[in-house]
Image 1 (cartoon, rainbow, N blue to C red):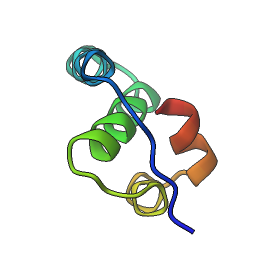
Image 2 (cartoon, helix red, strand yellow; image 1 turned 60 degrees about the vertical axis):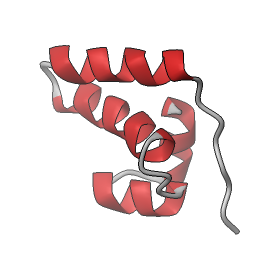
Image 3 (cartoon, rainbow, N blue to C red; image 1 turned 90 degrees about the horizontal axis):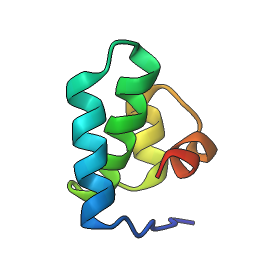
Image 4 (cartoon, rainbow, N blue to C red; image 1 turned 45 degrees about the vertical axis):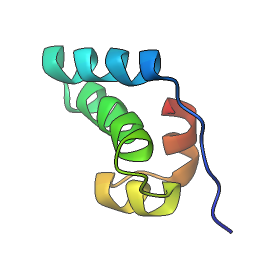
Length: 62
């Protein structure tokens, strides 16, 4: 079952700012999870596989 997440344009902008300022890998992964879901329309399961996290973590970040 594929679940979709609705992320606002403001949320994507904040994720891009976090990505640009990220020092720790965890911060970078959080930002990428939002960007992959919102801009590339990759589903949560694939996003989780790409980032090496669970789909629950992806939804928590999105």
